[in-house]
Figure 1 (cartoon, rainbow, N blue to C red):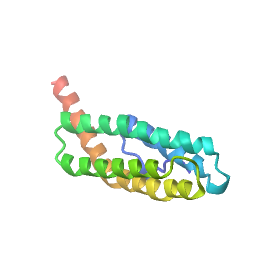
Figure 2: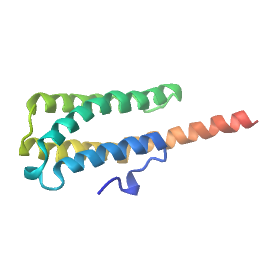
Figure 3: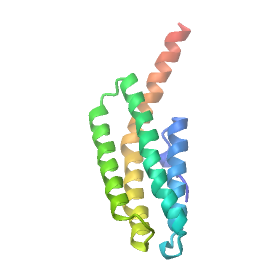
Figure 4: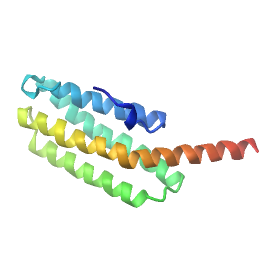
Length: 139
């Protein structure tokens, strides 16, 4: 499936990272969790931990630099996701069909919802702020 255009924020680094994560989770289950590669499961959960660290930190830096007005809400969403992934990793240390399905349905579902709502707003805000800064430099 990959990243549908409706999920694109227009912020290149954000879209690339979102696409990479979604592709990885989809590869894990490949719509058939019972045939998923157990090594892919371990890799995917490790990638989720890295994703949280890198992607969320980057978004949070942009929110701080540009003084994003919905920063508190967005940070709470990130904290909720971090807690969900940590709990998932504690409960699913090895591959299982149930774990792969939960990863695909619940965790991927949350990511897609978050991108479609919160990250779209953040992306719009970042693009506007960057445009203002470029125009100010040209003046």
